[in-house]
Length: 567
Image (cartoon, rainbow, N blue to C red; front, side, top):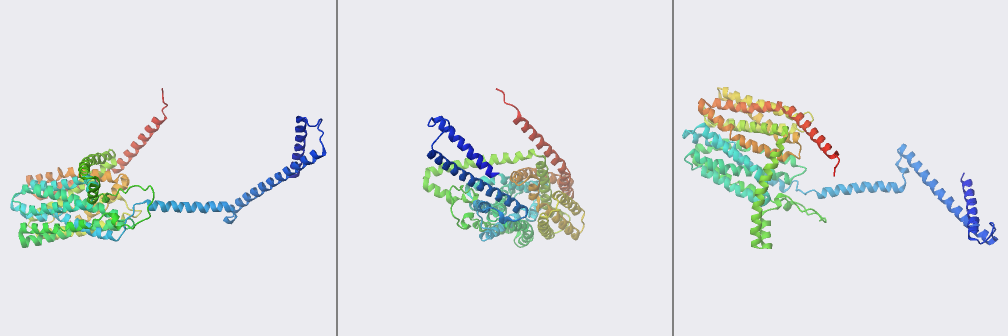
């Protein structure tokens, strides 16, 4: 077949030669000389050799392709052409380089080393903060009962503290951006100590609205949130372990502070014990001293061109602002401080609005309400326990023991639930529903207990229920709303929970004053906690509503994009 093709090409070439010579008029009727004939024949033969070489290369290529296909079918990768193997290997190298570049682009973290020192400092602050928050009844019950303070006033003192505590969440981010981790922690540590020390000299329960509800509330809210937020910046692979340590010490103040306060009050009375406690609280400055910027403890890496500027919150410290003033002059520094204050206010309002926007979701509303009623129910119950036990004839030391026992059960259950939450069979909704039942049921049993043993058992079970809630309440938000919506979901929940303290606690105190018994007050709080169980029953309906809403929204967007433009 190839011979016939080449012969036909030669004939066509010869005929072309005849035609070209006739058209040029060099010879007539296709006649030409022997010299011309031989030269033309040599050109034709040269073209023939070139054609045969091209055909041979095409045959070689097609044969190689067939061998490659056969080699793939037989699983033999050695039949790949050399250039294709090189392309494949170069693709693997490119992917490895891309992965390496992504890892290099990630913000470096110490993942240990000084990070464990930060965990120690944060844990110390969390313990001291919870000593004043969750031990409110142990610290102030004797003082308030001696002054015949009404339950509604007591409830307002504690719940305004919780309100200001939760209101620090939205403003924390802008303040860290402006001043940095360590300066804020040191400043609010002194405010915390000042509020505690001045509370030792109050002569009226109404003065506690300023010293405890405002000063201690704002400072403890700031210190607690800073301690929880800074630790993840120092860890990546061991972030879960570091967070677990912090969460475990969240009950440390309740466990250690209750018996410590009782011992100090027995020895030095209310004033002396509160003064000593204020001195202990100054140790928050030690915890703040180790809150270094992360970049101080990161190994130096090869600089990369056009790399984005580091936006880590802790890098924007007071030291950088001082250097900026030195470079740009005092007048420029004053202008920047003014702009910074304006930016804080703007960021505050934008943060609040963005957090509240997530409440358009029915799931977000359910999550925010369950968080509100659970926190308001069990924290107010914990505050009223020492008052209720002393009203029933028990001693303050018995109340301190019960509070510490509930803290131990809280820690154990919290760690166990957090560990099981990573398993496939774990159900967040069922766990939260069981936790709500345990909390409300144990609170009801507490009012019916007529012996110290039964009271301790009720408080231990109550601690298990609280631990099941606290162990995963933040993970529940991620489970239903996604990681991207976690921060606004958390912020919105804090806002609603804070406003809930202005209603639930004072209402319970009012009921106690009207009924004349703390049992009736705790029954109200039991109903509030049980409402969390009822709200969780509505979660499947909320999920279906959000799914239908998202589908309708997507369909409307598609319809709008398909509408033809008219001029």
